[in-house]
Length: 141
Image (cartoon, rainbow, N blue to C red):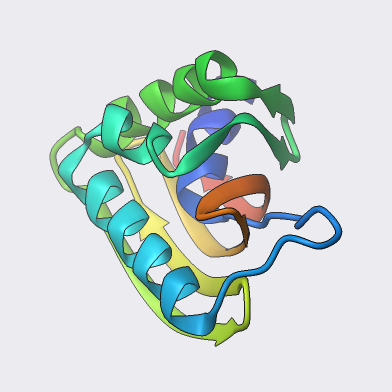
């Protein structure tokens, strides 16, 4: 069950905190979010990781993941779940402000129904610095 939630969490939300003094613009935040979601849809973990700073932190209900290796392992599990037949992922809403990108979503896989998820990315120096995830997942079995 914990593995299922871990997999879903990545897909569900991306929230980042920005270090003091780093700045981005709405266009850059939107570009990074769009590129990141396209890489997720393609199942390309390497492309997803290219959007993260080397020392990025990803905070989820399942734990904290630090750096490319840990974040990559998390995404590997999520991509494996979403690669199975019948999976769906729908972005419900997006919003942007300066260096912040937000999106709400819902999804379904063979194992889980993700009733709602929310991601916020905070961009520093053109990279995701920190990500947090929130979601409501209901196991099918």
